[in-house]
Image (tube, rainbow, N blue to C red; front, side, top):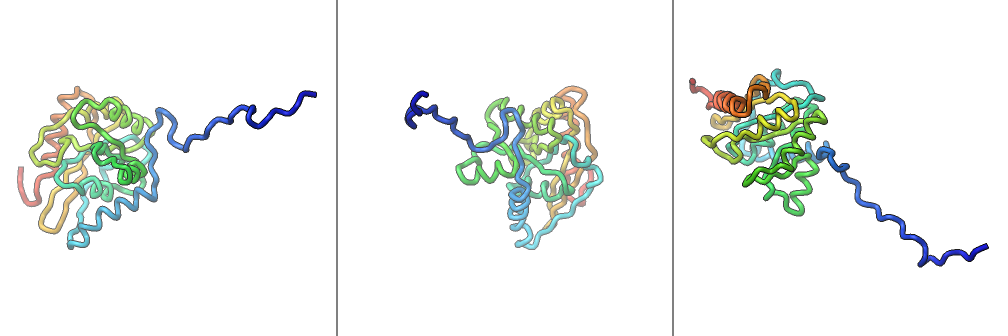
Length: 217
């Protein structure tokens, strides 16, 4: 019988890596963190005596189906207002500028399901991540203007992602009337017809949905 192997000569067991989403899998959403962040980020509105009026919830497709949510972007709280306005069951995973993903806040953002995007270039990785979320019947949130603006130009990334993910686009308009924020969900639109045509149509719909209360076309 051979001698027992010395502990130093035994093969080293493989190191266990922290649990994470498998390669190629969409970002995970921690429901508890998601709800906590949405509630916390909406507190400033209510503490200032503001409130939200939501219209068009009947246009939101049921959970368990892929969806791209495209909204105009005027304030830093827009993502959280749109997330709060959505019917229960949908977790809105936003493309967020990569500058936000600092050591602590970045971990919270990722736990909520959002993911970074490089706004200065054609971020192929972010596009692929968005498509994977849609393929898993998730909900991707994008601001087609890219930055907070009432007059900014539209980017074609929304149409491209929706087409690749075979998902409808849900246009959302945000406007403010004094202490009242109005969130309007429009009818979903398809991504068929070419990137340019879809982007132009989306821009038209967002302009109408985001028109301040009491104004006419």
